[in-house]
Length: 192
Image (cartoon, rainbow, N blue to C red; front, side, top):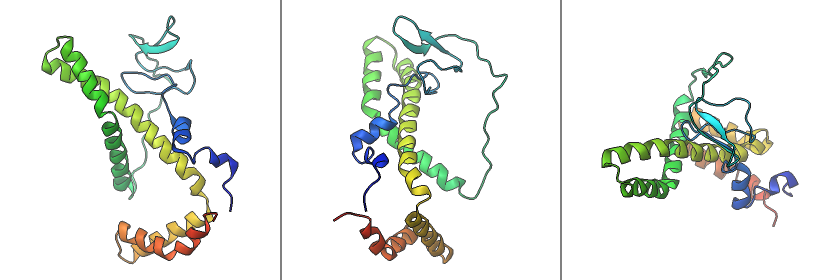
């Protein structure tokens, strides 16, 4: 079985990360909002375009919320585990940014800010950077999951996990049992 050409670009980690990177996309340093195109039609509360540098930056700007309706997802039984995954992704994002956080903290200390002011300034700066890294990681997860979403093998595996869980097994054990059960099918997925 051959990998479709549309998915070959995500087989290498560096290629994959490039397709999901938000580095080249304009974003707000305050709220972490990332824009798809270089000149977004909607801006967050403090985004303005820095003409000299050709990018967006934080500044005082009025916000038009007249046509914005906040999204409030409905609660369901999987919210707890979904929340755990999001927390895990955020933890990974913060770990990835830890060195940068230390550098920013040291920079503020060298500039003569008090320890408390340095802590506050660093937290404010890192919140946006952590959110940006979280969105990058979540984008990677989505990119991996999209091709699997409607696959027959993935459907069988998901059904088997649910079946084992309905028999009283916890998630990890149900997944292990499912992977063992479907091992021959999974082995067929690789070209040898």
